[in-house]
Image 1 (spheres, rainbow, N blue to C red):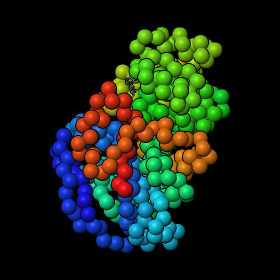
Image 2: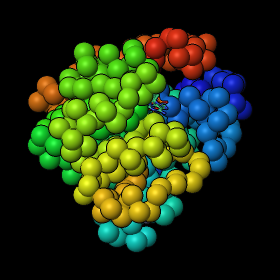
Image 3: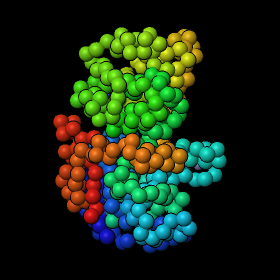
Length: 337
Ligand SMILES: NC(=O)c1ccc[n+]([C@@H]2O[C@H](COP(=O)([O-])OP(=O)(O)OC[C@H]3O[C@@H](n4cnc5c(N)ncnc54)[C@H](O)[C@@H]3O)[C@@H](O)[C@H]2O)c1
Ligand SMILES: [Zn+2]
Ligand SMILES: [Zn+2]
């Protein structure tokens, strides 16, 4: 079979490889779709921290089972899988939080992933396709990231949810905050992304942090209350630190976005609000199932997110172009058939 290896930053190479053989506890998937995400782009750029090369990228995957020992799955079935492989024994795993296992291995990040024709995955990670298309199934993982953040926030109907950052992760977060009934406010510094939020995601309010007074607008939108939930999806330290001051008293602040520095917050301001700060890492099976159910209910349209399409053979040549913001990539989708 063919595989596409990221040999070093900036360099992809197609190579021939042995097709995986069956082993106990594993299933083999014929890959049909590979969604490209920020992590893949950063790995190619060489800006992803703690990333080792050579590596086969790809963790947003959909395909067809060719071999399985899982009694609830069958050969030929359409599936996606949860690409965060966990130990099953640590404190997080024991407490039902495999998404933050102490020795988590993410397919396509810590171990080789899905830019291959056939991939062997732990059978416990399989997720039924449930009649969804390959495109939809390859979008489940990135959308589950936002769905998990929204679940962590415990968003209630009609409460004000400020989502900062309207990249692919923020757009999914906004969608699931809308599905939870939140009154969503999108904050970004990119007008075309904000227009996308209004026109394609159904976001009620948008603010451009570059040329609008954010606090004044938030006061107006929330009748002076300020947002009771803020979710960061920028991964930008300045944006993360600034947003503490946008939070309502009694509010919750959830960090889906990730950056390398140290967060700094005025303790008296944080105390005054009796605020709650949470991180949100990856997603769980419950989030995957919530995304799938939302797709089945017609609440999420894959066409909204997929802006670029290529075949497997075109990835090497096209990949660098997806790094250019002028190309307006939200989700590039690779088809294997
Ligand atoms: N929780 C998880 O497990 C998980 C999984 C995947 C990605 N992430 C993180 O989510 C974050 C977002 O990922 P993405 O792929 O959507 O990134 P992206 O870079 O495509 O989007 C970030 C958005 O934030 C906006 N932004 C940047 N600085 C801003 C500022 N000061 N004020 C307002 N908006 C600002 C940008 O204009 C952009 O639209 C990253 O930090 C990424 O590492 C987390
Ligand atoms: Zn991803
Ligand atoms: Zn574990």
